[in-house]
Length: 327
Image (tube, rainbow, N blue to C red):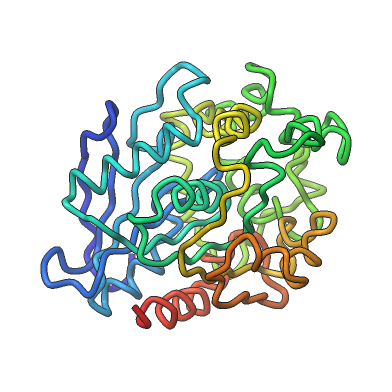
């Protein structure tokens, strides 16, 4: 870790134990920032941003989400809906005595952040979401022509697409065995979800070389993730994907709701999420702004891939800071 001291603690919230990393002042802070990581990551993905914002007087709070790292991983697949995860976060804020926070999300953390802003907007001062735009058609059951997300992905990309492949318990776990954590984490962080690469069934070292590592990633960084996933396995993380359809069903009361939170959105032009069919027209053509009326800015970073807060750490940290100082 770089400058500020990272503090670790376990917080009891919503019936589970949450490992939480914190940085910056606990009292007299300019504000609190809640960081939500994605798949297959940990609080550690936000290390650079916590250093940057903590040093500038913000209280930074980065939990391992349910199923990850030092946080409880319930055995039941049904315990990983968006309602459970948002419930964890609201309970965490209550336990920490925080009425409102800035929220920064990435990947699955971005999806959860969108849900948090839909369900409990009064708890969020402003949102900076990275990678995943608000996508009503895979988040909320809406209208007579609605297609469940997994069926949609199956039609669009076929049954071997990773989100489809992850559905059957045990199948994904063979690929994502804890014993494979070192190879998997290198391949995922170096290649997956960027520049046209999804998460193939066979991530072969010859096809996807991981030596040398990219300049934004060190062996120590890899080892931090690996040590955790060797202990926990990946099932908790994969269970988020197994609740795509259930999330849509549960979120149906918000079928026509808009995200009424000031928002900045950041994405790399090499991120697969920025290259989904129709997504750029949606983001830049008015659809995104219609769903998120307080959308302040869309930032597209040329050449950047999926794990943008690590790959372009300084740039992303600056973008977050430049937005939240307005409030």
